[in-house]
Image 1 (cartoon, rainbow, N blue to C red):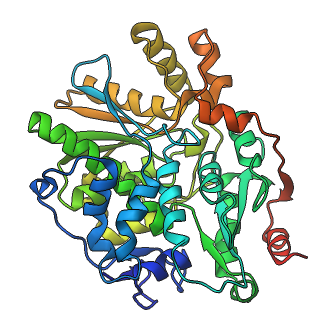
Image 2 (cartoon, rainbow, N blue to C red):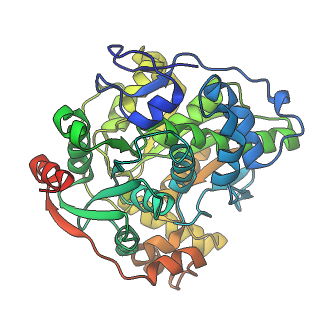
Length: 431
């Protein structure tokens, strides 16, 4: 399979080249030149996450140098569960994606990307810099996946004061080949600085760069796997398609669900839950797409005003009216997030992080509007990462998973940086 740019002005490349480059030469995002189609019965006898991953992703790896390593890559990346658990309300489920080393769904994609990149041949005399902007969870997942890996350095940018204290601690606790920069701006500023670095050909001649944001194919493709796994599990048990509510900011997780459905997995409706950042909400309500500055909310990992993967969505479905029919979208403000966390705990004993609460609130709204059938709200992070928000609402402390506790026990450090590209350029150049 070949991969082409969303902007159609760069040559098609193989998977390894697309993963290594991050962005296409014309500044676009890589997309597959065609999508495989699966009958769900093709996964007969295939049950585990690594096995489903290898079967699902094989066409994307076909004829690539990594094809012979796919089984090993999947076994290395998918070492923790993504259980589909029942919610208290009938036919409602939670897809728990927070059981990895940094307690967020980003662990799946980051570990898969690292497993691929360690196997891609490159110049051993120059370390590859993995440059990543994070709104909260991506940076820690990427840092954990690449920490101590020879031939790589990781540079993480996050918006200072706009992530939870525990997220900030995670981002700065790795050291070694991981550097963390706290930027005096928004996530959109961080993302814009990273994109400018990738567009800077003079810098890239001196400093080899690659991406680990959701623009990377190495992050996007493995995120299809937990949707395939949970949808197949439900289809085998019940004979029905599973519908999903996906909390989203930069659109990578939602796009992965859409791709899995487009490949023939037994996925029904897809609803997107956003916070008070209304770029996507307004587009799906019928307005022209207009990027805007992000605003700070309780669901900080979704505080995105210019979602990168919107470009992929428009490439996959250029007709705006048709694209709007692919999804239902609901915006959930901070007051509704608080109310959902409080009420789900008091009524059902459920403990939700703010991002998961947007999905659960959207599911509640869908049910009130008459939505039928089985639904899964996607739980993207463990509530313990947001203790300052959640614990006052539920009135008790949250048990911290061991992997997260181990990270929080380390010392942490992040360097300040202005939200200006020249400062990042100088940092990357060693000036």
